[in-house]
Length: 320
Image (tube, rainbow, N blue to C red; front, side, top):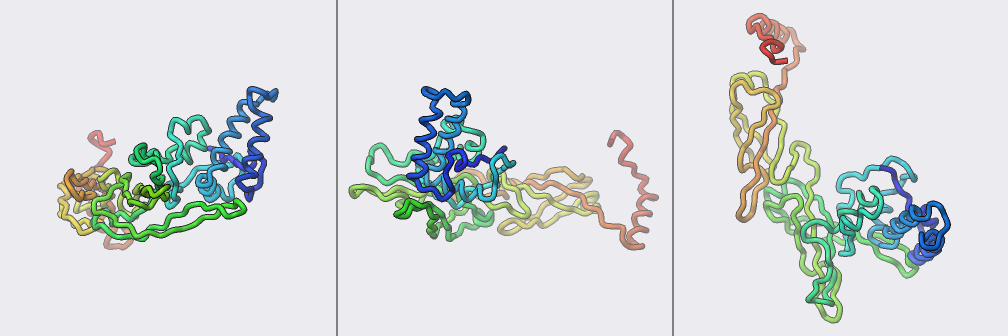
């Protein structure tokens, strides 16, 4: 996917004010609108202009785009890092996935899912016309928090405009209670932490979408945990009972006799727990038989003895 320089498309510098962007868009729209333009590429250019304006005229999207795109050139190969938008606080003025399809793949990859998670969107409620707008943000938690629950300080960044219309990032820090059993994709609602209401109406809420930071040992899928479990050749051949550390506590697992690399064992109920009702996830262990190195004379002698005594050829009997 190619990086798009929205500033270049509109012909404005990166320090342009909101008014500068509005004027540049209107000027170019008069030139390239398909209803009036005689330019051969008017329709494609107008689509580009609409996309650039949709991002740069929205303070939230503009700040996120500026942070993500720093150092990239137009046309350069670009792939946004996972959870690039974590920690950005957005209001309810998102694009639905359907609306995002009107723009490029670049736009859809960055902003197409904004506000599409369960519990996000809309902003004001129909029966509270002056109720404050809901805000939302994606937050990264440690997997261990799902097992124990915790109270964490969460820092969120949101754009603010100064009197000259220049954008800056403002950070606020909140103490957030993380419930035990929280899972990726879950929404934590903080009442009253959205936009203030008008005319004495209540403020909106802040909706935090949970994601987990990459873990050095576990891969998370829903409530299930996946772990590669190294075992010795004798543990695999003879069977064994091993203690496997969990993000909180440990569990004893029986390795069956004759286990091979690639075999998966399921330990039910030892994945991410649930706080109320429902079923906990499972722990899925991928067996990986690891050979000790033949880096001493004694180790080599043991391997040579095995080669003589076992007479085992894995390439026979249809194994390959």
